[in-house]
Structures are given as C-alpha cells and as structure tokens.
Length: 432
Ligand code: ATP
Ligand code: MG
Image (cartoon, rainbow, N blue to C red; front, side, top):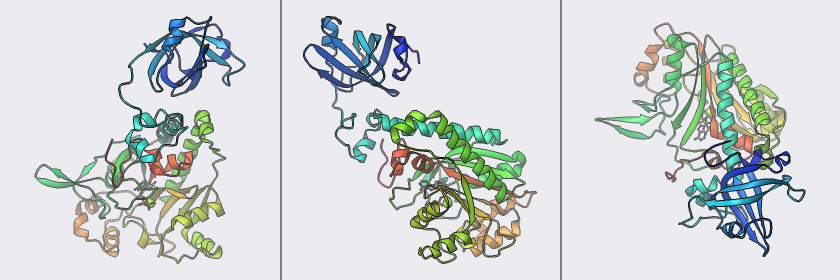
C-alpha cells in the first residue's frame, strides 16, 4: 500500500523482490544489538520483518540510528534481500532510518506479548493494544463481518436505512434504558431499532437492513454483555419467520465463508478453524426434550441457559436455529404460532454455544397486538403510536437482529466480548 511514508506493507514483501529498494513505515518491535550486527524487528499491522545492520555492509551511522527504543515509529529506507534464515524468506538491508516521532512517554505494556498484560490495562490503552497483531486480527475479521453482512443484504434485495439513536419511549417496554436530557424533555437511547425498521417495511420499503449502535442499561457485568453494542438488523415485508430464518441462514453462511476466504492470515494467527458452516434447525420443544434426555433439566417455558445453549450446539452442531419459543418468554410483538397456541413464530441463532441472533415474525394485526401487550403485563396506552401504525395497511413481516460483537467473539474464539469491541462500554468503562 503506497503512501507518502511507505512503498509497501510488510506482508507485501516477497523473496522475488530481491535487490529492490523499499520504504517501510512501522514500529520498532524489538532491537537486538550483538556487537557487529544490529537486528531490528520492524512491525506494521500486516506483520514483521527483520532489518539487519551489519558492519561493513551498512554505514556505521545507519547502524547507530537503529538502536531505538521499542515502539518508536519509523520509516526504514532499505533494500530487500533474500534470506534463507528468516521465516518470511527476506530481510531488509537498511540505507536510512528516520525516527518519525521520538517517544516522549512510556509504553504501558509489552506489545511483543512476552509479558502478559492485564485486560483493563490493554483496554485503557487500546491504541497500544492494537499494535499487538492478535488484536488487529480480531478487528480485521470484524471489518470483513461488516462488509460481508452488507454484501449479503444487498444481494438479497434489502436496502440500507438509518434509524435514530435518541427515542422518546422504549420499544420493548422494558427497563434497561439510558435516560438522556433532550432539551426540556426526557428521552432515551434506543435499545433496538425494532419499531423503526418495522415502520420502514410497512411504509412500503419492503426489505430493509441497518447497522446500528444500541444501548442497554443492563446492570449485570458478564463476558457476553456490553452496554453499547452494534446490531446488524434485517426486516422483510410479506414474510413469516421461515422467510426470516432462510435469510438469516444465507446471511450467516455468506459472512462466515467470506471470513474464511479473505482472512486466512488473521484466522491462522488466532488459531481459528472455521470449519464448514452447516446450519441445523430445531423447535424449542425439541430442544427442551433433547436437553432433558441428556440430563440438563429444563421445563417448557424456561429460557435456555448458557449451559443449555452450549449443550444444544454439542448435540446438533455449531450453527443452530432454535425456533418457536413459548410466547411468554419472547417480546410481545412476536406472532403467535398458528399450529401451537403456547408458542410464537420466534427464533434464535446459536453459534458455538452462544446466542448471536434473535428474530421473529411480528404481529401486524392491531387487535392481536393489543391483547399480546396485555398478556405480557404491559399497558397498551404506552404503545399507541406503535399499535396505530398497524391500523393503516400493514402487511405481515418478519426480521432479526445479529449482534456484531457476539458474532466476532464466536468466530475469533475470544473468551470475553470486550476483546471484540474496539472501545467497549460496560458497567464501569466509559473511557477511552
Ligand atoms: P441475551 O439474552 O443473550 O442477553 P437478548 O436476547 O437480550 O440477549 P436481543 O434483544 O435478542 O438480545 O438482541 C439481539 C442480539 O444482539 C443478540 O442475539 C446478541 O447477539 C446481541 N446482544 C443483545 N444484547 C447484548 C449485550 N448486552 N451485549 C452484547 N450483545 C448483545
Ligand atoms: Mg435474544
């Protein structure tokens, strides 16, 4: 990648460039001075290369200028040399080293990973943490997840929309909302784009998608929850939950196969085997009976615990759609199941033992919606605006929401969701 301060990335250097002059921009990863030779490991976000300053071959002043503290940011002018001793098959013979911005503050932890750093220290200094290639790989993979999601949506004929982050009332009637001052009024940060994507669909856009930040004031502090997350949402008109499930399956397959194809280096660095994305589909009732026969006790009507999600993926496979949950454990706007009065047309997608997506066919019939609001112990008068929208020619529709950080976590094998959000917001963290 050519720019004012570099001619190529380190990963673009190959042995057949032997003798070629290059300009590399990066950070000093390590320097070893063994008398007549100075070795500098130079790093950019694509990898590392060894710069070799040998007496006799390289000018003494250049060798002297190589002796820099770790994490100094430099431009290295030099020549590519084939080398059987280095893993990449090349090294750089320097002709000049330019220190672009001499260090004037201490680096808070070892970027080389030789001394393990505490997660809080890493997150407090995310700009330094990102210099660890493992961290960079997580976010490179996340970038491919985002672009593949958009690609899959566009291929399936959905249009991208924007929805507001500041809202007057809760869509799901729940607590867990962050209150903000909005001039003379109270307002809230949106916990989901639910209402808005439905309005876009029933307004006639028919098939829409969005990538939105959502805010959840959940007080618990777990390795699976953040208080600000990015949701990748889809909503489709004239559709039921089976249509939404097929779209979700197609989308997740598209994302996973793109990641496997385009991010081989990052996956290898993280030790991840993507496997073949095969997706199974079972009903909640089947999940409950399978769990009980395996000794994981669960009664109809209970939500799946974390252990249950792990067990189900062990039994049925890495990618598992569980559908038709009991009405009472799903949002009030989930369409009742025509053939099983206790359940609704809702579903979750589990990936490697964790929920990464939830969806449903929505109730588009206003009277049914009002009775469901009441059944869920909520006050229909708080939902007038929502219900009334369905009195004006709203077609059946369905959709889902896929959590970006959860999906990234399950792909990369990270054990804490904070690893998969560049600047996470949790119960205590608001900085940087
Ligand atoms: P959970 O029950 O696992 O806390 P949820 O069912 O409340 O999640 P949904 O409202 O279904 O979450 O949100 C859709 C998707 O967004 C989830 O499947 C998940 O991938 C992601 N998600 C929701 N809440 C969080 C959170 N607090 N932190 C991280 N991801 C979340
Ligand atoms: Mg859910």
